[in-house]
Length: 453
Image (cartoon, rainbow, N blue to C red; front, top):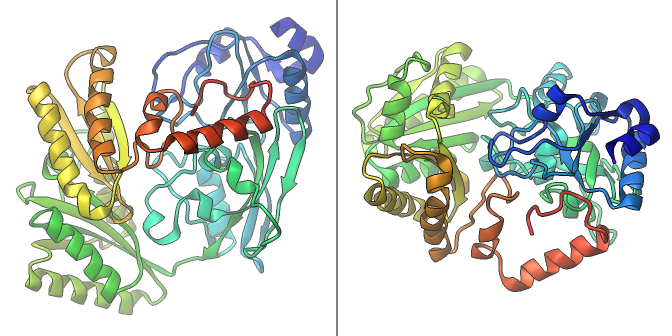
């Protein structure tokens, strides 16, 4: 079949061994499988022609962006072809008056951020893999990230989309307007659909005025409850909280002790930690307001200690701690990404750690995350091969999430690794409607088959 594709699509198709290995899995590194071929279109017309051919011949297509996903959503199966968007990249337009950016789907997020900054504007979407993840993948998985608390998920950053359907039809809705009540919002079908309904090729993104000031604070607190009170105080008194990250003490201690981190700005003996970022327009006044607010928080007992970054370099060192790259060096690490109402996250984290520790007493279980938007991450290491413990961990973690009515996936989607647990967060009626939509838009089931549902 790859030879037939090669003859029909020409140099867009590759079966080189190294390239097949590169595209065999997303960042989860689970169930690696070399695809039959890799398609690398340079234009939307090439995406359309490739899908039209694959649809006609019933060839399954797995769309891929920067391969930074953790749910197996971009991992192919045997006999499938990968359609990589890595060549379909570039900033097509920045409309400063409309505060929008039109960008091709394969453009790295960081490239788009810098382009917005160069135009005196600000792209609010931001995640740790900004240098390698791509805009199309961000939108297809409805990425969250560090600034959701103020700006919302990727869904909230999108005004218009161009999407290629399974049969090659190019569906263009590249609007720049915020208010458009003309029937169903078709774009929202594709945002978060993980490439199962269509392949996103262009995006119109909302931009914002570039903040003139950004201040970052590392704060110690007495416990989870005090951390939530601190967050609400900051929002009430400052109103410009653009990020608020919680770090449980064992996470902070492990990461700052690790040589790869290289920084410990605050003692590791505090009961809890938070990292917050504030955006404003008056640097000196904003700094004073923040210092005064933190002083009041310490006096009221909502905080124990606080450090205000004095430079961009120091702010970056604070964020290095929260990004927790030291954890990625643990072999067989299993990452969970769940959400629940903020009021319940502290108790959920305690139960998860207690249940996992009871089962694996020698294991390491770290909790951290964006509690302002109800999302925590759990990084779990049981000391053995991932395949030996993953299912049992899933049962423990997702069982607790289901019990409190939370979501098994706050940011990274469903893919294949969470598909069996979709019913923990979605009703049977909702899943049935998802199936109907999938059948309507992809009747032959060629787009990312076996993912999500």
